[in-house]
Image (cartoon, rainbow, N blue to C red; front, side):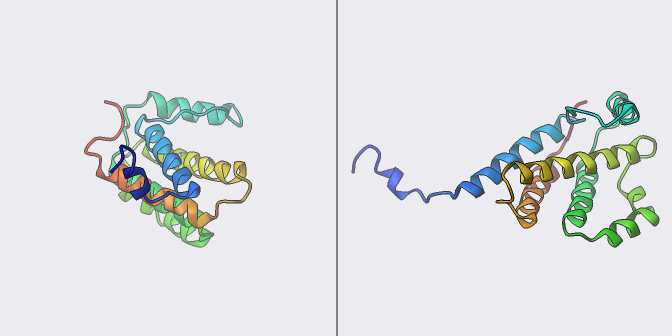
Length: 152
């Protein structure tokens, strides 16, 4: 048996699966270092909201992230009525801390959704929304397992 024969025994990983795994890893790192970095803001109001979140003592926990992933999945699946139902009935109160928690929830959902849709746009529709859901499922496994998420 030659020195590199073990390479022939490895199963090839499709490039798409590798890409999704790397995106998942990158997003998990960004969310773990709460709040994730924002490159550009639409307006000063958005910048001020981000600053409040960044300066607050709030640090997300696994249930918070699970709810964020739930809402993003609903958005990706086009279930806008379900999202409206969640917000109208204030179901988010069961998943976020009082105070800045609601703003943080909306920020996290918006940030993650934009990150995923930007990725889809960059690879020019070679990714489906189902692929993006695979990334979300992986993020939920990663961040849901963490005993401590975020700084502090």
